[in-house]
Image (cartoon, rainbow, N blue to C red; front, side, top):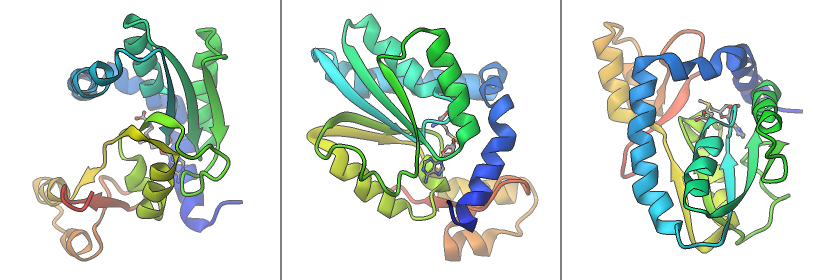
Length: 209
Ligand SMILES: C[S@@+](CC[C@H](N)C(=O)[O-])C[C@H]1O[C@@H](n2cnc3c(N)ncnc32)[C@H](O)[C@@H]1O
């Protein structure tokens, strides 16, 4: 049973789950995804392109968008992959499961309901790559607890790639949208939200992360 903080997160993403993959059709996210794919190719795929088989964890996988993209990028390089997709919102994970079933890759990708602040059910020092894309860490209640868990699971030469909310962008957004009402919350608590329906999430400075 999740606490009140996570009940809000789960409720927020449960309402979004059906629409979540429509971001593919929005030009802002399309551009962002294409840029991210280029970075992934350069920083992740190239680095592991000589591997025979990779163990990959998607910590906060949502509907599995990035696991599927990474799977295809490695497949093109003939690198085998084994994915564990973990998420706290059952309805997001259901979407991932549907896509995995449709693509008939149930052997290569497993979904698990869980909180990445506690990864005790997963092997330590085992994963070559762990990803948490698009604000997963920002949505966690205790991001540094999650980071420590993730660190334990990575192999010594493993790679963790995440995308989090940026504190400087949070200031910019608050001012650019003429709100200015959250400036103190951003500076004192590193908390931000981009609309009234979402919970406040943690924003990081680059040096903090
Ligand atoms: C913005 S979505 C990103 C999903 C996916 N990584 C993507 O880029 O499409 C954030 C996801 O983080 C999940 N999440 C938030 N806190 C979590 C936690 N402590 N443990 C596991 N998942 C979490 C949410 O349920 C949601 O699916």
